[in-house]
Amino acid sequence: MVDDSQLPLLDAAWLRAFRRKLPAWYARNARDLPWRRSSDPYAVWLSEVMLQQTQVETVRPYFERFLRELPSIRTLAEAAEHRILQLWEGLGYYRRAQQLHRAAQVIQSEHEGRFPQDPAAVRRLPGIGRYTAGAILSIAFDQRQPILEANTARLLSRLLAYGGDPASPAGKRLLWAAAEALLPRRSPGRFNQALMELGSQVCRPQAPQCPECPVATLCRARIEGRQMEIPLRRRKPPAEAVREAAAVVSRRGRVLLVQWPAGRRWAGLWDFPRFAVRGRRPPDIHRELVENVRRLTGLCVRPGLHLKTLRHGVTRFRITLDCYAAEYLAGRHLPQKHLPIRWLRPAELEGYPLSSTGRKLAGLLAAGQPGAGAGVVIQSEGDS
Ligand code: SF4
Image (cartoon, rainbow, N blue to C red):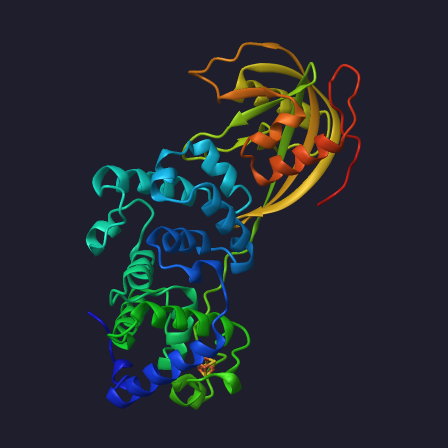
């Protein structure tokens, strides 16, 4: 059941005023973003998937390049996953790209290559939840479908002065009901975009710009002076520090890459073999490196120089990655037992989708000096 004690606020006069003020503000203030120049469902869908968990300015060049390379659902469905991951490299959350690919194949096989307009069919596509379905159907087909994502959840919580947790089941029910009640019959897609724009540009998380807000007179949180308390913020669990090591294994001028399997972080991407370690420096870390490279690839290596320490975050983990050179000695790679591997020249790494740290190491290799025996030695050391 929806706890709709806040919804009476949305009476007919309030709704009329809100539906007048918001589109008028959007007409003057909408940013010119590449995905707003088209109502092609494929472009809308791609932008919505890329924008999940990712900033607009980060997405912009990825969106333009992806659309240039794979301009239709058919070209996406027929592309190799390797190519899609290359185009996605650096954007993170690679599962999104793999689900996009699978959904394009479903659209080709079950919907004759045309993006479905039936909400139930859209929700059955891989990677498409209620928000994404609502965004595509409203923006591309002008269907009266509500949306709720981080920006609009914050905006609606403040408009209603909802003091509960917007991510709780009760909070979601209330806010989805509000998002639905707000929607006008005319141009619901543009209205949804205006809601997101107001949430992201004016009703900001830490500093809502109430004096500039076109709906300030309708906002219960502002009227009550509670806009800084709303929405209720969940305390994030502290980041967990993790130590990992990576091995740049060389053999006759080539380096060893592994491909991460489904279900692992960076599934489908290529990387230098890496693993969690307990040791911090040789000889402990060398021993762990030898064991782990053998476990992952079946190959026996001799560890060498410490090359670099990279620090990066993945979800709630704060990872310190110690990168070591290593030299191939012997061993047998068994495809049925070990990760897929490739021996590549540094110049060939450009053609492979790599993890973010893999790409940093590849950049160092490209700038590094060939060393005797090991093939490639990186002398630099430091943090990034
Ligand atoms: Fe957000 Fe302030 Fe506008 Fe209310 S008045 S919607 S808190 S920016």
